[in-house]
Image (tube, rainbow, N blue to C red):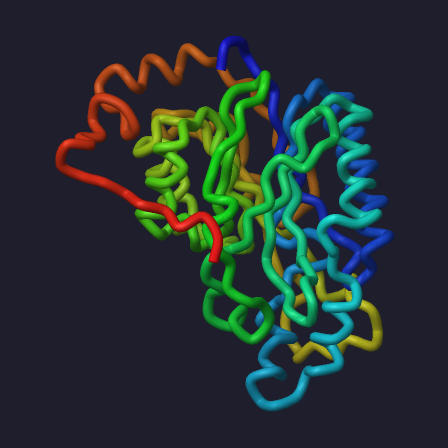
Length: 296
């Protein structure tokens, strides 16, 4: 990273199970962020077309809910497709690095995938979540190491992991070794304790961390998706942008939609890496070695 960069977390609600309408909202939100000067915009985990809340996934464990899963699969994104071309065109139109969490359909399996498009509109990273967590294992297949990398952009080196993948030390180490300035952490974890983790990662990696969290309401779901009784808020957000010393630059934003925007100062990267550089003078490759299997 050679110059200050303005970035944004788009904590906005999808139109659940409606891929086209959700992509329209993505385009409008990205335009809004670009209008505020953002050069990189991150959307939440599986923003398109919805994060599978445990409220409705419980039915799968009881042997039901197959119709809802099928509805999710039908609304998921195929890569490549007209949908990815649309996302790429949004990135190109506004000169953005655009990072979007999607449900990705490949054959008859759905994956939790992070797509990162460059300002030229080309898909630069496709990372499938390595391990679905808890109820998610009834929804998604397991990913692979194909997206455990970073890309060199005019804003600096960018890469990311999805939600509780960020608890996997070796997955983080793979990104550190690839070189990082901006670390993307889209998530559905709307707990206070999640922030302990992203602040630790910022200090461990000596990098900027963008955590964009799911915000969704039961009242936004279509009538043909049955939800057990409970509060309207299914995901309360908590998106934040953290500096390399673990302090907040923006957010967290709770219980509402909004853009979380911050300016990143490259001097903070150098200042914090003087004493500790996970991929540099503190890495000890003569003692420790990590091997990543890129694809199955």
